Image (cartoon, rainbow, N blue to C red; front, side, top):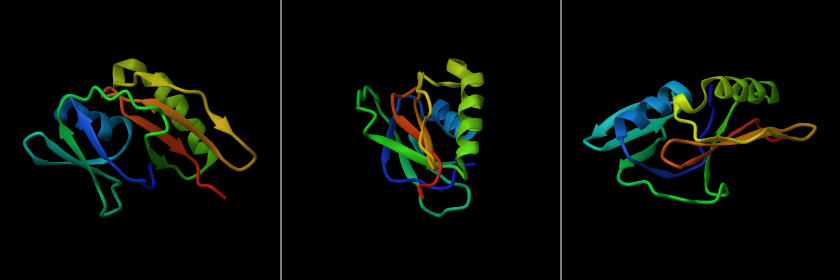
Length: 124
């Protein structure tokens, strides 16, 4: 279960397909705001990110990413294992290995619209 967003506005090629990815793969709540506009948010938070339907030919560096924080380093490992299992059929273009230290772990994934996401444990 994700716990926080950092910031952002997303572009997507197909708001319906991307909405399913955000809900089914990332565990976020999606709200169809308008035609071609989906709001995505953590289920327990009021803040949201706007996802706009438009050609998403971003080729950003992974430094431009959206971070979802999960409850622990163990949860990071579980999320990575589950996303590996789901694979490209779920809309994951790239899944990077976990990077960890004594008290923190995270990994990156590239979604179907070439947006980078980080799944991270809380920082101490």
